[in-house]
Length: 425
Ligand SMILES: *Cc1c(COP(=O)(O)O)cnc(C)c1O
Image (tube, rainbow, N blue to C red; front, side, top):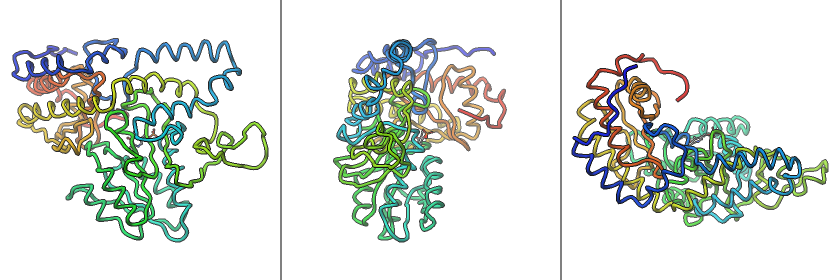
């Protein structure tokens, strides 16, 4: 495949701006903390799978060789047994929670099941879950699955197409609502919910709230305690860079008496008594079920340390600047080529990725990955998502991406690709 000229593109007026923004960027030194075997690759999919921190390579090598290889089962009491609590405590300040109220366990989907089922089991009689059409599919599938199990639960999926999503959800909450569950940042458009407003509207109606923080943790400041949120869940492999399939985190407000519906020995008050009766631990550990994936769990620590060192406020400031700069370039260079901004224009209502719609979106995505040395991702039917991870995305990356799209289209390269969509991206 012929490669395009790789840029950067100093002849464009935006280049000088990008260089100046990079020079003034207080987080620019963090890029060197990540493995970049191909320095020409522009990686804009950190909202789906974050890059590998260099420190994680050493940590995993140590866990494998020393803790598993050498120490063997002695590592359970010495190092592994409390690791999920410890990592939960490290994530806690990123979400405005106390260390004791967060634990890492399972996948986000399983954690969502535990929290939704647990929350609905508190209530007697008919129940209603309010969610929305911006939510990630697994969140909706889990809510549906819980409704099927309980038999007396209705799932209302709010249509947000024609209204401000926050207002549409607030309007759908009423006295019949038991639980409101939403993604803080929507995976497709990047819309950022007003957490405080939704949480207080739900509480006014007597409902509980569960926030999925998968697309906001590590990149948007979150204050679960400040807005009295009841429950939260989220991935550790997106902006927290924990690695493929790293376990999820779970938060339950200390005032909420919630049981783990997937009771297992890891949530038992005294697991090594091996008794036949389940007695839940009083702490957040009761939300564990079975043996933790120690290798994946260990990979989270060094990456969360990087996010905490940079600070979420500084990360958010750069994230907003990156998305604003990209949108400016889109307006000037990409809109005339048939791209439509599919993310909120208001930076206060936007997470850290920007979606562009284009009739040829899938072909353009393939051409960018294959010949443009830029990795975004694609969400059907016509959304190209550009994820900006402030710890390793530069302003020159953003500028180069926009100019490479212009060049690809000018050379007709996307037309070389099939219009039919592939499997995983
Ligand atoms: C990425 C993501 C998930 C993924 O769930 P897993 O169980 O980890 O596969 C769930 N919900 C949201 C909102 C996500 O963005």
